Image (cartoon, rainbow, N blue to C red):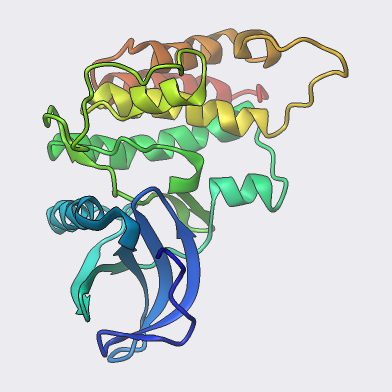
Length: 269
């Protein structure tokens, strides 16, 4: 049911599907061409298997994007129908995701490089929060990197701050059996509060640093604070993101700006 659309297919008489970019929990993304303007756009359809939930989340993403204008976030261009399916059309951001940079190109990041990316992401996150929304999915597949800058993409799980039960599921507690797994991390990131995005940023930073980490053969797994040789101030900052030390992006941003002035003036990486 969720098999990707074929290359060359014309959607709604207006968009030609050029490339299947990937599939998330609820949607599929395609690089497409607007046949009227020749412009490259991103077309996102709900996964057919998700039925009403997928369509509802896609509509909510469209509603949110209509209210947002930020240079580091995609902009909605159209809402289009093809037969019985609907799709959201938005600006296409060239480049590769942080996930692709790590897994496909083998890229690694110094502490300072990772901090610079975090610093760049705080701008769209602050804008999003001040508009009354939370992203809830700040991860390496949803951060785009190109020569012009850093972009926060895929607002498919975004919702209003404090929105009750945004996914239509019981959110009273973490899923059973995931106390020490990625499931518990995702649960924490999905809470409709600003701290969730800061928590996601903390894990995002760790993913960037672990891209260059090689454990010693036979060595037992340790905590990230033991495995990663981080500067004390940076370790404290990341721990603050994970522990919910700040109630807003503004507070975290002010501290990070002070740190960046210090480390950028020296050779600490």
